[in-house]
Length: 376
Picture 1 (tube, rainbow, N blue to C red):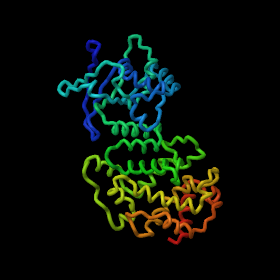
Picture 2: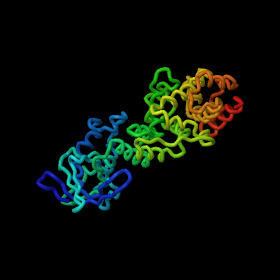
Picture 3: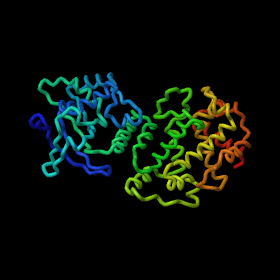
Picture 4: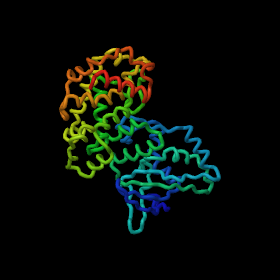
C-alpha cells in the first residue's frame, strides 16, 4: 500500500463479480483504514445520523458499544491478534477509482470517504493498537457507487446472520427497494396499518422490533410481515429478484389450487399500491375487534388475542374466512367478515394463557377452535 503525495492511497485489489455488482478485495493498513472511515465511525460513536442515509431513513441509531470497543482494543495488542474477516466499505466513485489493468485501487486520502457497512467496532478497537513500528493490516471489501437499497440489503443480511439486528429491521430495510417485492409490499401494509388512526393495529405493532411501549405494542413487525408474505409467495426472494431484473414486467398470474393457497398473490401482482391487501386485512381484523372488543383491546399480559398467539392463529384462520366468500381478488367487507365471527362461541375471558398456551400449541388450539366453531 502506498500513500501518494499525502492525497491518495493506492493498493492492489482483486475484483470479484457477483449478482449485486462488482466488489474489490484488498489490504489496507489499519491506521489508514481508521483515517478514511474516521468521520463515519465517529458519527456512530456520538449518535449523529448526519449523512447516514440507511439509519436516518428507518429511524434507527447504530450505536458504538464502548465496552466492545475496549475489549477489541485489548485484543488487537495480543501477540496472536487477527481479524480474518473483511471489513466492508461503501465508497463513491468521486473518491475512488479502480484500474483493471494494473489491479490498483486509488482512494482519496480524506477522513470522510468511506461508509462502514460492517466492521465499525473493529475499526474503533484499532484506535487502541500500540503500533511502535508494528503494522496491523486489515482485509477490506469495497463497493463503489453502491445504491442505497443494496447498501441496506447488505447491512441487513450481515447483521441478521450475526443476530445484531432484528428481523423486523431486516423487513424494514426492504422499503428502500425501488422495485416491487413481497417483502416491500408486506412492509408497506404493516406500516400503514400501524400508522393509520382507526386501524385495528393503530400504534400496536413493534416497528423495528424495539417497542416504545411494550404494553401497547403487542405484535412484532416481523411476525406480521411473515404472515402476509405467507399468502403472497412461495419464494419471496425469487419474486424480488424477478422484479429487480425486469423493471417493466409483471409476474404471471396464478390460478386453481395454487391461487387458493396463495390467494393474495394475484392482488400483489396487479395492485401496484398495495391498497387492496391492506384493506382486506383491515376489514378482517376490524371484525375480530368488533366481535371481541375487550379481549382485543386488553393489554394485560395474561391475555393472548392481540398478541402473537392470537394473531398467528387468526392469520391462519384468515385464509378460510376470505376464501369462504369465493371472491378471490376482491375486497371482503367488514360486515361480511363479521358474519363469520358472529357465529363463533368463544367468550372474551377465554382468550388467556391458561387456555391458549403461548407458542405453537396455543396457536394451533385457537386456530382449531376458530375453524370448528365457525363451521368453515
